[in-house]
Length: 469
Image (cartoon, rainbow, N blue to C red; front, side, top):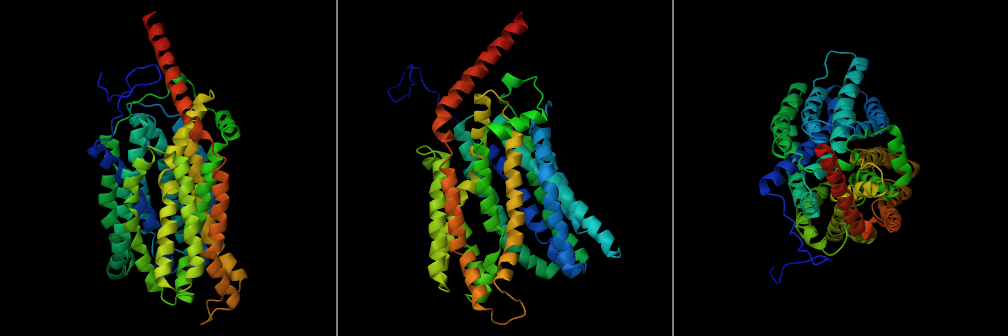
């Protein structure tokens, strides 16, 4: 045995964990890039429906809000269905076909019959949006962790998929955000133009998004202890009662999405900075943050995922406090944006690793792993947060006296906008930081993983003995 070779407590050589091959890493990472662009395109649905299809803005907003209420139900059902799936292709892998369904539904949104009545248009948009978001995207949320822990088997692989693999979708979405507005101005001048523009992205990204299904197979059996057990709704209720840690993750996800989707930056740069075009400069800072994804794997060798999340929250808080003192100073605003944007990367990109820890904990305490249901809880928090963020902004600035018909807004409205872009999110993220201090699984993980592996080995041995007999 080499002198440099590591040994465990019993003196046995520790096997070096292999990383994810580049081809598999790319195939895995292209799917979230594909669905990320699909979600961005659906974000333009209101503009299309109001300006091109001449539908009332309030009606369109109400339809999208109604879909969020339905999301909560479909999320939990999707988790239940995925957790009960057993096919030759695997448990989570079959649901990758929802990528095709999501893109088809997104395209159909823009194919609403132009000559139809407003009521028919409303039903068309609601149904296609529900299929894309509440069904297909919901299943893709629910299957993500389920698929990952059965296609890969080591912590090193999980970290690489969540960090290095996160660079690809971030780049794809960033490039989309640069290209799409320009193409929209020249192509999307009619309904036919909108359909052509969506097709331009839908076909190649649907194909790229499906590469994961064809390249990455489920090979790792983590269900050996519960191979013949069917997940019941009572199991999910037991999960919600017994695993408090998923609520901590979901709370952090909810808050991040509320603040991210509030959209106060448009008002801040319009009414305080006086130049909304400066926002494009801040958007470019996303490229500066990308190198963080290459640093995280090294950090996670020394600290836990949750500790990195908490550190990120502190950086985020500092960034928002920085905004309070920035006023209209663009340089200070760029610094603040860099800080809070970088700070939320851990919770936005590494939540899957925390969900795996929660699944390991479920197995440790004698429950089924239920990665699908755990992912559904976090996905529900994601969608509710996005919905709340979209609605809260109008309510809060409206209560402060904001009036779109005024050339100059009252001082109360300006103060509210400043607070929503600085101290209010700083205070809320501080609460998230305190809640995340209650997360103790990271300290328990060495024992949990060792116990789970021993129990799986024993279950396989027992199964082998029964087969021989």
